[in-house]
Image (tube, rainbow, N blue to C red):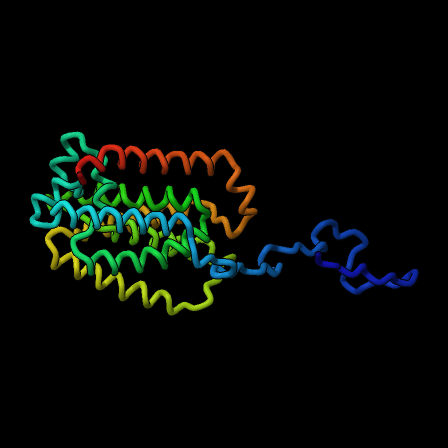
Length: 269
């Protein structure tokens, strides 16, 4: 609340030089938004070290990689495609579920562990910033946009890095669009993300089944949704979780995930 002191009374007959009896509304000061102090929200405040949806996604990736190894799904590129990699030819034949399934598969243990470390860090931040259901929608959307851009090439693709690029893009959009209301405690996190992005893009140039098109597609999807999704940290988190829009977001994401699992898991037997 801002208290504006009332003008001091003037003695009868006293006048201010240059003033008129009635200046109308022109003499009333207008308090603009830029004059008000707005407390910025710390993005890291209250963040949980055990983001439940992120951990479930990590466990799903670990399970998928375990099955890949167990059934010989990494023996050659053909086997990688047979077990669910994102590949244009199969998708055009109607196997749209591959747009998501490839994001849960990995080429080797180094690829898996590197992605899971970044998924934990960025997933923790995004799940806290956007809320559980919007976060899951964001992850599924980044999988889809990454998979769609992958179809511009004939390269079969596996790896969660496209979706992880989406999470990074969402955080970038969130902080930029709402920069007057959200504060990042340590800006060095941007340097870490930049190093990881360069490393991952280099990996995409070296590995035949890691696609930079997928990375860029995921990044684009994340940038768009990060700017559009209302952040949970700027509102009542519980009320937001109960809203029809948020529930619809969760239902869409779960529908995509469930249908993908139903059609993909038979290929991992």
